[in-house]
Length: 411
Image 1 (tube, rainbow, N blue to C red):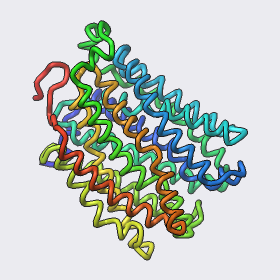
Image 2: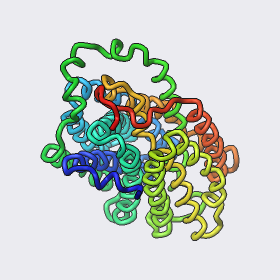
Image 3: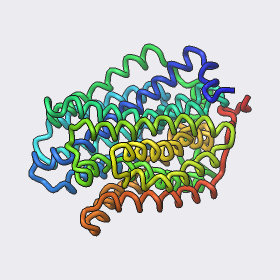
Image 4: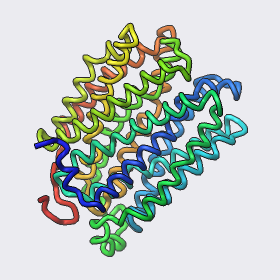
């Protein structure tokens, strides 16, 4: 049986829902990663240190738990679909406003507000998709949804390569307002989650603390797990383009720099789909642990390949493993979450984990400064250590593969 077979069994409505959720995360990531490509340019325009601009990445990540809680609670109360549309509009508006920031201070405030809006998207899209498809399709769809993140990274790299020399960094953020158009597609083609519809009246009678009774230990564990996951992914991605400029001496808009980022994201898409689908066969935890540990032997090629060919191979393989582990996350978190808080808990755990991991880029930059500015050393040691921590946390945790949603048994 093909790993892709579950996708063929989805009906037209389910496919629209999955596509909208995938595009939401893709375009959200696209908007986030635009900043990672223009750190040097922004620092020059505002006459600031590069570390001050990198702080914008920290603020975005730190703001995401607020958005996850705010939009998640709204989605549990008023529905996944309308709140997802509101969220997409808001993160597009804040991205556009960034293009007109008159100072670094305003720029950083706008990145914080963008982070609030960005924080809501993942949880809303994942819960809407997972509650709308058959249980046996969750693993593959989970990998597909999470592949939206590297797709967004790739789109950011492509737009930067094609346009930055013509429209500058401000022009890139204007282009970043385009995701608002996704709302038209959601409004026309995506229905509300059937699981939310079935339980909406009962859910309106209870508050968050009542709904979370007996689940706080799970929430704490998921937050720690997602902190490790975010340190893993952001540690391999956020400063990669800066590594290209500083260590490899590749100009920001060069074809070579774009090629390496393209290979990075191609590997991420392949890994997310493969390990997400594989998790249906070998289990969620086993798939995540396997991917995390296989990242370690790939590190030398990724950072020290020595030639464009081997650096490209390393970029591809490291993200097969990093995003391979991540590909299981949407279904794993949604299966572990109670129906009443599925719009809130996965997103809040994810984004609180992001908050704990928000200093990743700054920490790597600091480690590099202690070693003569060597980002390769900083990124290599970081990923090796986090891969081991992540594998241990996954091994210690629970699994609920195929659990029924909405009080139904998995079929």
